Image (cartoon, rainbow, N blue to C red; front, top):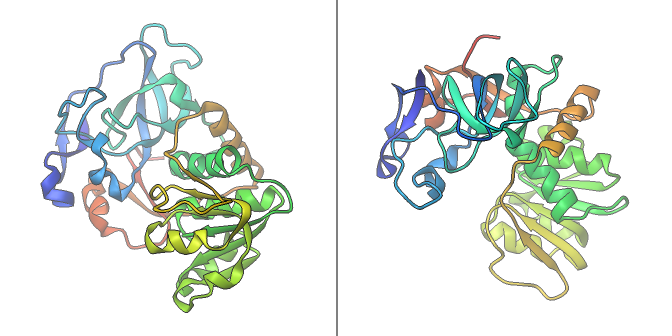
Length: 306
């Protein structure tokens, strides 16, 4: 099969290549998915799990990408809950070969059915951003109606979904980003927008919940606008300092079939949208992985034609 591979951590994105790889084998509780569309995160080459398996052993060359939508073509021993020919979408394991390939082996529990009226490109754009937003708001952030929520990086894949979910949950949503992101933020449903370059962030507090996707100095600034008793949720890095009276949570997204089903149900109802930018072929995926995309929004690799 054709697959995008990376072989050398030191080479960075220049080491991303399209190669021929053996088709994967379905282990116990796995399914084989014929990939129709896949998503990736540009920073994957910095993740330890990209280069080592669960036992810490080197696994290069490896196939990146962890979001997928496709069709089940094989079932491993003991696999339940999915059937041959079923349309699915979800999140592949961090420490196994990923989704930028014609076929991938995935634990069945990491996948959810993809309804026939949701296309594969949309399905592939949803798992990481959608699950991250869902878990950050409802599991870790414990959002409640009437709260004020500040989300950084609101124009990005995660931030735009955070804004939509928080608004539907009954929160007043403030988006933070650069001036060029203002229109996208309002498309995502924010009630107010703060321009980070103008130093407006400190003027929007106090807020009940901050969802920070960017980290760095901005993360420290975010902590200062959380009210006492409020929560700071981050996917960028653990907080450098703890602020008394503020609950700080750093987390890494996890697969969850029920949450995926909730998210795709919202997409079908028109209550949630993902912002897809470039859609490229598998042949063009190495260039896209290296920053060759031109549009805003998430880049999706369309492995098979619609």
